[in-house]
Amino acid sequence: MTDDELLAALSHLGITRRSWRAILLLPLVRIAWADGTVQGPEAEMIRTAAGQLGVTGEAWDVVARWLERGPHGPTAERGQALLVELAQRNSGLGAELPADVLDSVQRQCLAVARSAGGLFGLAFTVDPMEERVLASLSRAIQKAEQAVLADLPTPDGGTWEEL
Figure 1: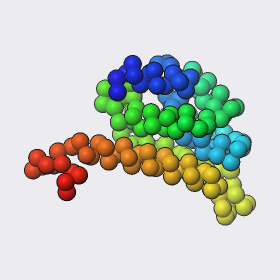
Figure 2: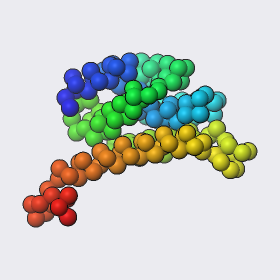
Figure 3: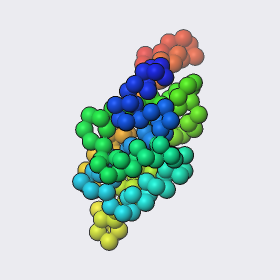
Figure 4: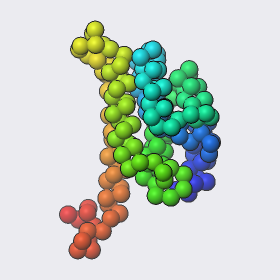
């Protein structure tokens, strides 16, 4: 996917070249909205993650809109796929992201899911709807990793799928 194609896809989420880093927080916002409302501790965890991931200015404005209205449906799923695409790029938009950015996003998603508490913060701390969003993100990352491995040649010139 070229930068122009990626930007065109991101524009459907209200994201521009100047605000593309907002996509890093989309899974966290999806987790926060999974139970139908964003709770204070969830919003605070997202603000903290924004600082850690360099989501500021116009990018934060996009995230703030998502926190108010929630990213739902196919748009949110597509955004998740675009995040994985950005994280795998070696040049252009997203290339400066650290290699472990998807792992970091997953850890932060779990932190957001746990932040709202459950039963006195001791049991049932991750809502079943939040678990579904976490699983969806995990599947998207695994699928992308498998696609990358399938394209890499093995030392003997075969493919990893043949092994």
